[in-house]
Length: 195
Image 1 (cartoon, rainbow, N blue to C red):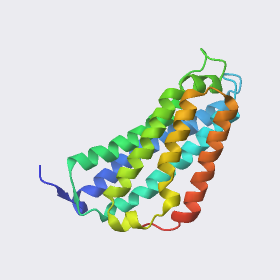
Image 2 (image 1 turned 60 degrees about the horizontal axis):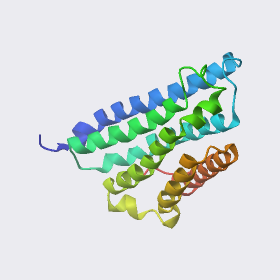
Image 3 (image 1 turned 180 degrees about the horizontal axis):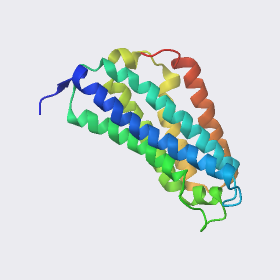
């Protein structure tokens, strides 16, 4: 199939991508609502709630960031597949923060720490996917960033390896704190306008 002009394909990609992001947000919000409605079902955890907050922010940032795709002149099936894969990776991270049941665990934190390999493997993948996504959007998009944006990949990968290896609550609290701080920094530095 020949590449399709953006005017024909981008709205369709945006709808499907928005659906995946919306499902991830819904899943996280339903987990928070369930914790509020039934606090005895699973032991609450600051670590778990911070990651939910960070993931909600990450999903909104991804959705906002993808507006820059409107500048792409031609689409291919491979590019659409890439965008859907990226969105699906974020959905899977949200699903890992929103288990159907924690009855086999001592609570949400125990579930999260025992599933951390999956979560941080997916998070590491998002750092790499974000770099490819930035490249796909073109030189003008890429050139608006400086070292502070590009440092997230090596630093994020190192933190993912540390989190993968450690089951320490304090290590994980520090990592989620750094992740949220960096998200806020990116918002204030780069996300004031669509570009």
